[in-house]
Length: 361
Image 1 (cartoon, one colour):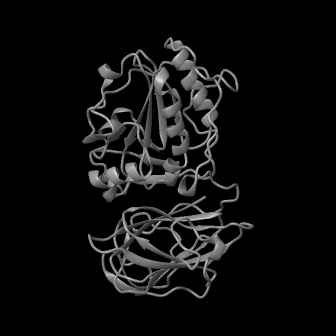
Image 2 (image 1 turned 180 degrees about the vertical axis):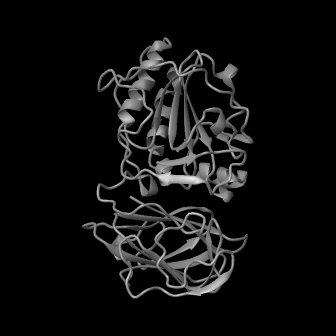
Image 3 (image 1 turned 135 degrees about the vertical axis):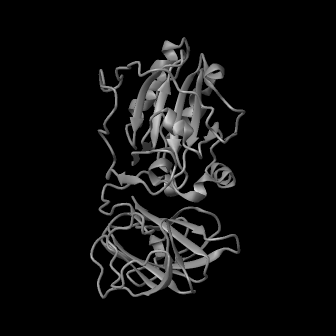
């Protein structure tokens, strides 16, 4: 789960973020549960208007008036956030299962990184992720602010009278959320509501996390970089040649070669630039983009100095090769055998790459 604290005038992407590790079970701010299957539903106020979106996908613009009489699920997400992507199989399943009995699912896409503000990038992500329910492009954080939201992901459930009745922050507890959907639909007069719970299994970056993840989200830009181990230290907004230390300890990372480090990302200045990371998790992901429009950027990854083989991710081949074609979260490693501490390395074979954020699972 990601959070944005002390948000003021701009949706600037380098604020006070922190990551709640693990499965986020027991996240705060939930309404108390009356029983294991049927949470107590409170009245948390009127649903805010949705007029702050800069555009809508898969739908004409929606508002409180047009949604009156419907049960509404508003899901705050962003397309590079692993915590937002892993719940997607459930959200998509709920949208399909309950559409005909009165549920409207709205994805409020609120960006973290600069390129996530661009409408064309959101359009491409929505298409590639097979999201077919309405998506409000909240690039100016207007809907986020209207809900007083602070988290990716966050789900808000609104009843047929336009009142917020439940909210949930973070991953997991999908059974509880679906039970609330069912209760609000019944309360709204829906008949024939299927009370069975959906059974889904995400693939690639949407797969559920492992239970043996000991590495935290780690940003590469100097604005939020931690555990950097190259002896030269991070130079801000200027080119520097970096070297990797003889040994990396768990959750340390380093650069090798010529790099320019910005507040949000790192860009290699010559072919052969490398990032190394000592991690312990099943999956290793990295948010990658093109620094400017141009041809795809080739890269090659390694585990403990060798080709990943069966441990390659969905965006790499067994020999470790892959390409950056669009800005998104790339799954580079998925350990198929016992999860253990490994040293990851990615080498960029072309310039124009942009590396932003490691996440694990």
